[in-house]
Image 1 (spheres, each protein chain N blue to C red):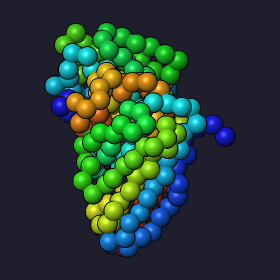
Image 2: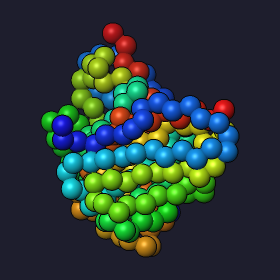
Image 3: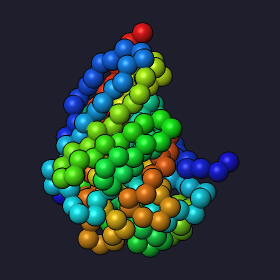
Length: 115
Length: 113
């Protein structure tokens, strides 16, 4: 199973770039890496997904090195509204009957953005 | 309204009672999931379903039962609730594959006394 490890918490200031790294040493060849954001009293919501190298969308970038044993979520110029818990998820492709517990979320990184 | 809903949003029950948490999605997504979220543990997968009548265990399935007779519904039953099952429960769905974007419901806060 691809267990994931993230820092428990991080602090930042408005306008700074924030990088959150997730370690997943046992990632399988076909696993994808997905990051979610969660605000208090809400369900997580999708931020970005990648398989290798770099992916960028309108809110974040995801950097994945060649060995894929880690991934880094980059949030450019954070604001107070980015204060949330960020989870990385390593997931296999479609699989029924053989992927018990293979959907492993990290324990989350609590990001606090200060003015 | 379209989306994924959970009911009840809050539930208090007693040890030994049976409790069913409901999850309903209107997108006709193939995959549905149940997670529990506890301080210090993050999100842990309880069960998931790839389609109607197809379910599989996740990381922490003990003490829970699921069924999926219709694509849009995925109820989670605690057959005999225990205090350790006090948690926030999230339901999610994804369109076609495990690795696709999951859309989460608002959660159900369950307190077992």
